[in-house]
Image 1 (cartoon, one colour):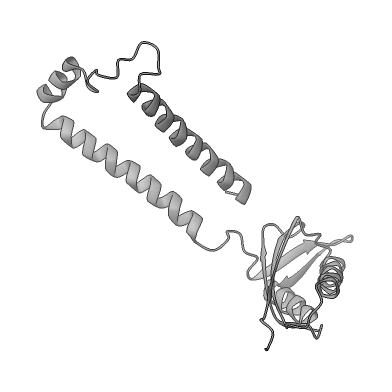
Image 2 (cartoon, helix red, strand yellow):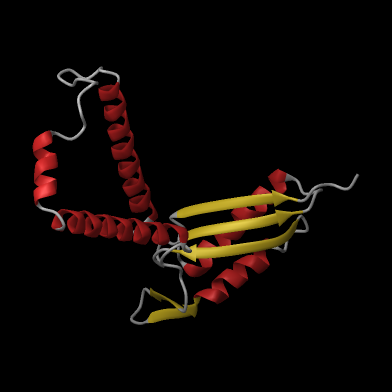
Length: 186
């Protein structure tokens, strides 16, 4: 699933939870028409059916809860792990003539890191490529010296990404640049 798909899924889950909480709060304060705030939560008929179906009702509730917990755990582990679709191994790109160009993705990220650290204001750089080769997402983190100018580094990063796009024939679909500035000496 793409990053946008994950954001949409988490947004839907959040909206459902907020709507459920708001409905319960409104019912508890008597603000919903047709709902008595003093009424019991479970009707006597539902409680009777629960007791009649025992122990299978408890087993069904436990299995349903375990499946819901497993689904939540799988969704959470997918969100916490590294970005999916990292360009590892070989980048394969069709050329204008018959054949394909193949290049290790690590070579591309190392080249972009070397290009970025060519500026004296950039102490370290880290690059991660994710997504599909024609339009990958590029994630860059640069650690800057205290005396680096923001405008100069911004122009340097822009030129380095432009060179990367021209060299690989892969225009980044998304570019995320994070800059960390070292504190100055007193």
